[in-house]
Length: 116
Image (cartoon, rainbow, N blue to C red; front, side, top):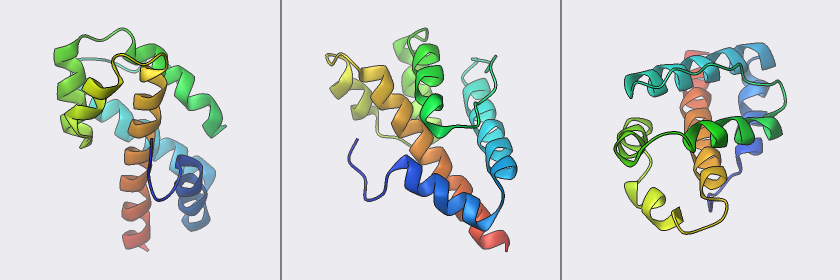
């Protein structure tokens, strides 16, 4: 995934404004809300280490159908073409998981930044 910042950089900026616990809680709540809108409950908790999030989400993404995936990408505000472009790659779900985490952390970062 090509972005101007990485998921880890956004994570670090968010916890600099708030605390690790608050960012983790808000990330889980945002992910839960978005996944549940598609009918997919999150039945795991996010680990405290950002590098462990991608495998958790990747596993979940591997279980959903194309219609749910497209709806999820729409809700999270990621282009549908991401899903289409990555279908033929070996680590498509990992790339999508990273994109989802990045987008959700950006939302949280801006929310925290403008709350203060």
